[in-house]
Image 1 (cartoon, rainbow, N blue to C red):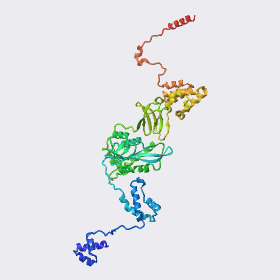
Image 2: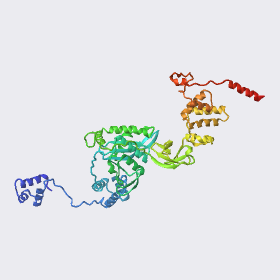
Image 3: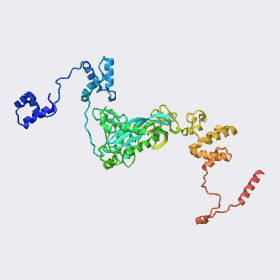
Image 4: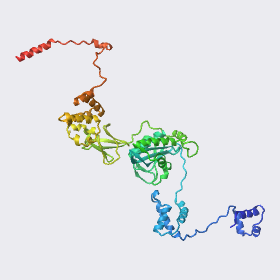
Length: 503
């Protein structure tokens, strides 16, 4: 094989000095074939194998390696064979004696042909946004808790938004998207998702989906088009795919300690604001500059917010409870055995009857819990006073300390203290616990233990007219009213009638 110097010498003799191929071959001691090759190509000579060399060590195992890699195509991407795993299996299952580097060099040759090829994509302003859910960990009220992160990113400006939730249920998904739209001050024309069951009832070949009813209503409210990735193709929403990890590394390291998951949304939102100062991937300006341009092309926000909740009807059981999401929630006893509508939000549960809210509870994400409001069961104490002692709703009822003090005094002074205490609790039908506590405190101060006295203080208002004489000069019409004085003699006649009857 000749070098580049010999090639240059041959080409110069032929093209510049106009020597013949025969003369060059005879004087430079090269074959005429070599001279012709040098005249046809000036690039450095490359050695080319006609056949792949036979590997005596790895050769017998190549079919097995190819079979494993082909099987990986039908398996989850995060559970494909790595080079280390292939080496361990070959060594342990097939008796491979070769070196690890030998296998790695072979994999480097064959693996690129097994991988997909992608094309860079450029989005126009306001065309598309992408959404994904991820997980992180935080200490919530002292307990290590899994937190679910809804992440959203606009494809043109690459502006980011994230929000923490205790769940990935449909109401959290819709609420997070709505908060993202209001953060970006507009709605993209298309939103791209995976295929979560919270949004999709049934998948078909291609991009056709049977969507959940609530999601269709939500999409119609904001007027965007829904687009779902092909199964096992997360690269179709590559803009948002790595955002979960970015949030984890920037906000959840070190592991935050908060009292509630809602408290996490402050630091997350602050990070989103700071991220707007990041240089745009195109290298011209910041993300905020691109977002300002994109806002002009986004759909405007609706005039009212969407109620992000799951709704269904249920019948109240004999214990005045309704079941929602594996838990029981109480309602006032007058609605027992009646149909009601349950609205499940991310943080609360509302029970509605005839378009009016009859009960509202903080939502529980545990299972087989009874969330009971004692005030819902107060009226039953009229007929069944004994349930105050053993009834579940009243066992953990946290009332102001004045109630317990009143109950203790009643036990010391009254023969039937429970009866009077129940009369006090029944005041909750007309007044709040705070109002009753204030009136009870004043009654005890005046030395009265009667519930009737408590009711007097509840009805008493400090802004009532005082006992001073009313000045009627401001109302001259009062002076025109004449009231006839009573006839005192009439009372004497009554006395005379009484004396006659006695005789």
